[in-house]
Image 1 (tube, rainbow, N blue to C red):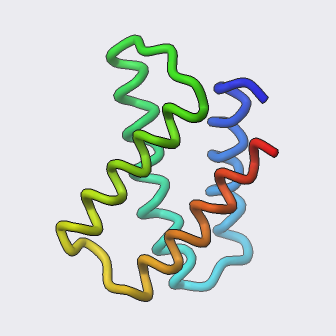
Image 2: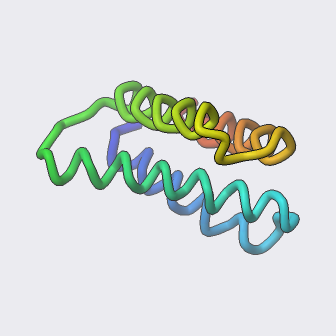
Length: 92
């Protein structure tokens, strides 16, 4: 899977959450999508040709920083982690 295909698949995954996700999952998906979109956007602005692995690493760094800043409670973190694992599995 190419980088662009991965980004498009992730965007579609986030869009599809609206149809079947719980309120907590929608919150977590929206939160994660913000981190995902920012990482993609920063790469575009900086004209970086990232690999999928590099993009994921940037997103994880952003999430860890947010967790350390207390942006999410434990339940929300769990929902974000579950959705993040599903996003990363899109590559397989």
